[in-house]
Image 1 (cartoon, rainbow, N blue to C red):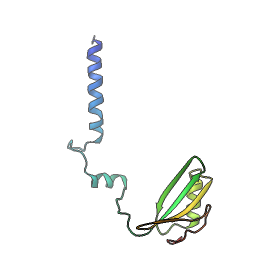
Image 2 (image 1 turned 135 degrees about the horizontal axis):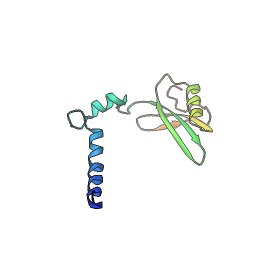
Image 3 (image 1 turned 120 degrees about the vertical axis):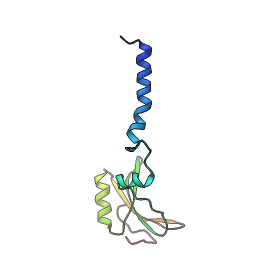
Image 4 (image 1 turned 135 degrees about the vertical axis):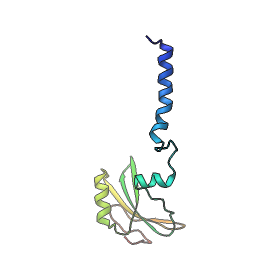
Length: 115
């Protein structure tokens, strides 16, 4: 029968080894950023120029904002905010040196970035 000290040693050793085993590639090396992006579908892009944003709001509690592509319409933004349980929503724009928000629940921002 193993002593408590031996069991504790094995538990600590396993806890230290498991995270490395879960993240290492088949050759034991850590994956680089490009291979990680390939697996997750994540895309890195610089935020320059004009960006459309859609924001779902639970007043006094939280706000969740997404950068969206040009294909999104006000209706698409509204549908997304409903899907996350927001009671209000807002269209916005991010420019190189400033931003603009429309009035709550669908007003176009001014200046507008294509909403």
